[in-house]
Image 1 (spheres, one colour):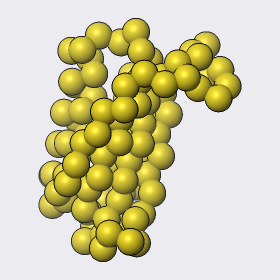
Image 2 (cartoon, rainbow, N blue to C red):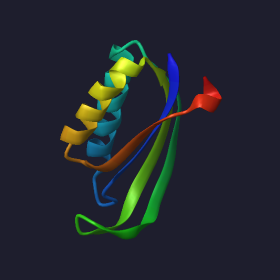
Image 3 (cartoon, rainbow, N blue to C red):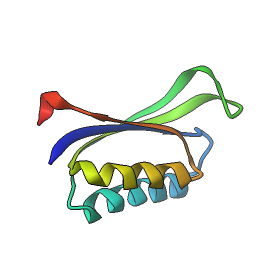
Image 4 (cartoon, one colour):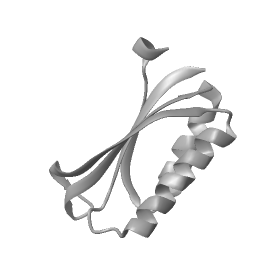
Length: 97
């Protein structure tokens, strides 16, 4: 398994129930592919560099995890079809393998 980090943001106006649902869906996707979540860091509300989908702020979350490289495509697909997630980025961390 390789080390990855996922950074995503949702609209700051989203309710806590929807945000928890997004986190649960991400966790389920990682764990179902035999991955393991190492750390979840909620960065909170941050100002965006430019307007995205009418938003000037975003509520960011950083997740460190280990997973097989084949499962990253499925996680990316899940994040793309999740309406609450505005943008996301998955990066392999070679310094944490």
